[in-house]
Length: 344
Image 1 (tube, rainbow, N blue to C red):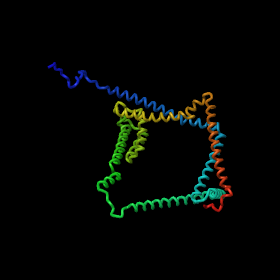
Image 2: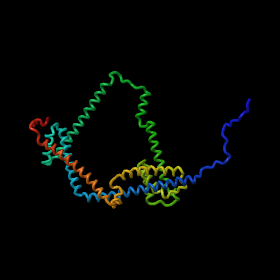
Image 3: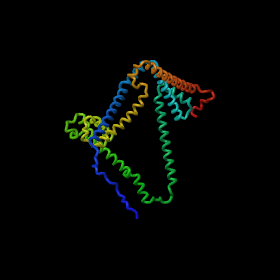
């Protein structure tokens, strides 16, 4: 036999001491990342606030002054178009309810406009329309009930097996496991947020310092919201307290897991805000207060707005002309149309 070789069952361990990670260094790294996320979020929030508070108002004032005449014309056309659309809608409603043609419906509406009885006439139309809908719904229910009665067996009612009936009852019951699980998850979520807020608002968590007036108000609102399980209000308080406590938190006393969770929460908010800012940057009024000082910027922007206004005005005029032609045709029906068939 050959020479025996001993095969080790497990690898030999190093004799060197296993060094645990430096928790203070890990904590400092996450705190630094958290502060960086908070700084970026604050910068993005400030940029968004500047856009709404400065850029948009300045842009609105400029283009309203620059295109005041065009805007007055456009607003008048929009008002005329809305009036014609309303008249068209009422003509259609009158025709549907009274079972008449368009010419008769238009004549009735124009006559009511002349003598000031338009609102009363349309109330009668809407009342008849509601009655017709109620009758149609009642007929549908009666037909459905009659169909169910026909399908019901004439012999004794066949009962379902107890197991199946119990299972159906269990599924229909609001106390089914899925519903209970959802309620439990919501309750657990509320308790978790509540504990987090208490840890931030309680004086013991802040070195025993006296809470501010705002923190006292938030504490009272928190107790009321928790008592009534108002999840939306609790989350609002949580967001407010997180923002206030970010500058006063004692990270040395916070678990690293909480710091990581706070950092991830800021990252999610920053992603949403960055996406929102990306959309606003495509608007013409983005950074308007600064860009308006660039040579040629206002001239180029005014040209683009003028083209857009001209196209919208042209489209409105075309639509108004089409509706007016339609109403004119109803006001002057052709001779072949028999006026005695108004109710046909």
